[in-house]
Image (cartoon, rainbow, N blue to C red; front, side):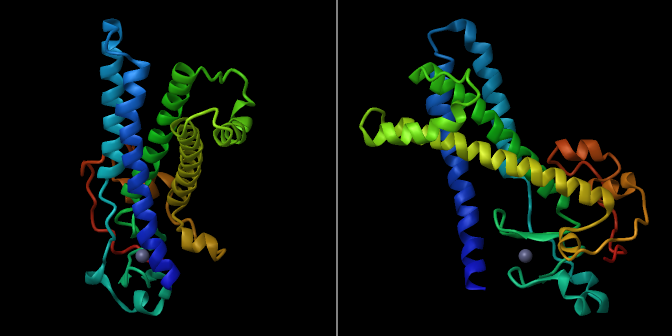
Amino acid sequence: MLKLRLLNAVAPAYFFIATAVTFILHFCFFIPTIFPNSDTSLKSSTTLHTIVFLFLIANETGVPVCSPHCSDKVDAHYLLNNRHFCKLCKKVILKRDHHCFFTGNCIGNKNMRYFLMFCIYTSCICMYCLVLGVAFLTVEYEISFENPLTFLTLLPLSTGYFFMGTISGLQLFLVLMLYVWLGIGLVCAGFCCQQVLLVARGQTWCQMQRGQLVENRSPWRSNLKDVFGTRWILGLVLPLQTVETGDRSHILV
Ligand SMILES: [Zn+2]
């Protein structure tokens, strides 16, 4: 339990430090180098990239993934069935899916939509920064990424060159960040796809891990509407409360 509590404190800190580092790298290194101020023809591109980056990072960090407490609907079903109770949050969660250590909250029916948005935008911003990072390394250090195998050899070669004193610590750090963005981006995208599939099937992560199959009582559109509202495609894109939540307390899993 102590390990889980420690992880619950370290993972959000890691997430916010990685976000802050990404923010600094983008505005202090990537934009000034790839789109220099001296070139007026690139001003519109600089503005566009700044807007895209700020939109992605605002959606990633601004999504309210708070732990959904359903104290008003605690009944015998929830109290007897311990999979609805989280020992870390010390809360009973309606249709509990899993505990997310990066947000430090439980994910249940009420905040699943925000959690999926958090995954989507984290994945998008990681892939976006990966592309800008590659462009920066190409412009600043003349590293060619034309060969697809470059990604396999870049980290070991950069580490070797760093200890030989050939490249700077900043260059090695940027190379490391490329792998961090690639890893987080792919993991978030994969996890998000899996969660959307589970939501569409009306199943939770807890049930899948226990090998429990739910009776498909409603079609996938209806399951998606339960989480994202009637305008569920809009609910996937906008972080605002644009969709009605409705009373889904009747959903027992
Ligand atoms: Zn929890």
